[in-house]
Every structure is written in structure tokens, then in C-alpha cells.
Length: 271
DNA sequence: AAAAGCCCCTGGATGC
DNA sequence: TGCATCCAGGGGCTTT
Image (cartoon, rainbow, N blue to C red; front, side, top):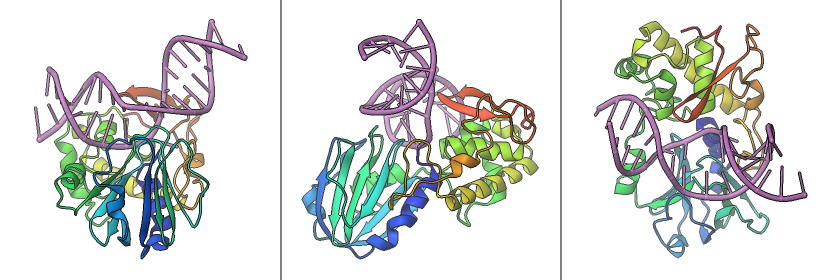
């Protein structure tokens, strides 16, 4: 589910409401992708200072240390003064003085991990190799183009890998490539500089549009306030296999790239 | 260094 | 109705 826009929308929906809250208790459900890395009791008494984002990770700054939260494929957060009793897929409940923060994650590819700081070896392992933030000033068109020249893999898979630019998942990779008319199977290194520049801009545009739309709700995503997104209704190609391209009416095609589905218009994305 | 596969896990949709 | 199969928003790890 959650690509950068969904994670950012989640962050925006509770960051201000949780800031300043004191942690009162933590309840764990089934194991997630990684263990919490500290005892739940050790978190009690600490204060939530802020919620930041790096790629698809949320960084919850505490008065001492921080929590890294990843939503995996099926995760979502809820933050409210009160929530129903935890269900079978609610695997992390953090009661604070300002509300209950809950991670709901049926597939359990997500995680909540405590680290002492961003220099913590575990934090470095998880965050250290990430590419540039696409919605920041660091996302420079020329450097983006220079990074792509060194990659022989298909451009779709380079975008998905997160090693050049973070946060672009399956939906937004497909959408950005459609916007600029690039065939997803095209080798990254074979793109002209001009096309790299246009792709850079398309990534910025599509991610910003998705954040404004509240993200994409394919199955059950909602932000921490329980609101669904609607960007899924605006996709040009993602999830539209066999349906007519919204620009030229050619049926949208679906292929497999690296165990993931790719959607594109064979006419609008000729090469 | 980069690329390609594998795997973690559950649930919904589809087909027989 | 029941069961098998396939597919899903990610990404770390291991092997080439």
C-alpha cells in the first residue's frame, strides 16, 4: 500500500496531534518484520517530540531515542483519543497522554523499531542506503540524470529500488513513466538527458498530486485520522490493465518486472 | 557495484 | 459451498 504519498499523508494526519504526548504504555501483538528492539516498558515516560519521514519510514522522535515505523505492504496507523479493543491485525498500540497510536498490518511486513538515534547501527542499516528525497530541494534534476546513466536495469525497476530516489513505489513509478511517455522496460542508462529531466519533474508532480489527494486507497489504506485517499481514481495506467488509455484509447497493458506488475500504454509509451 | 531472485505474511478475487 | 491458485501498495538478504 503505502508509498511515499501515503506515508506522508499519514504523517501529516497525526504529527501535530501527538507532539508533546507522554508515552504511558505499549502493547505488542504478533511479531512484525523486526522486533521492537527494546522493552515496551522502557518507552514509558518518554515524550513524543515530532514525527518526521525518510522515504517510506516514519521517524517518531522521542525525548530519548526514536521509533522507526514502516507500513510495509498492508500497514496503516490510527491515532485517536480512543480506539476499539485491538483486533487480530493490530500489532502495536502505544497509549499516550494525547491518544492511542495503533499500527494495523494484516500482512505484517511492517515494523516498529526503536533506535537510540540516527547514528544507531540499526538506523544506519535501515536508512543509510536510501536515495534522495523526491520532495526535497536535494532532488536535483542533473544529479538524477547522472545517477540513471550508471544503471543498466529497466527504468521502472531502478525507480522502484529506492537507491536513486526514495518513496516511488509501484503505483507512482507506473504513473510517472506514463506522464513522460517512457516505456518501463527502457534501460535507465539509455534515456536522454532531456527525458531524465522530464521524468524528474513527473516524479515531483505525481507525488505531490497524490499527497494532495490523500494518497491512494487500494484496499483499506487510511490516514491516522481514518480518512481514505482518492488518488487511485486518478491513475492513468496503474490497475487499468485491458482498459482504454485515457489519452489514446489503446488498451493498457500489464507485464511482470521483477515479480511486480507494471502497467503502461503501448502507444503513449513507445520507447 | 549492480542486478536478479527469494522470501517474509494474510486475505481477497477468481476459477474449477 | 469448498478448495486451489494467483495476486497485492515493500524491501532486506543472498546469490550471481
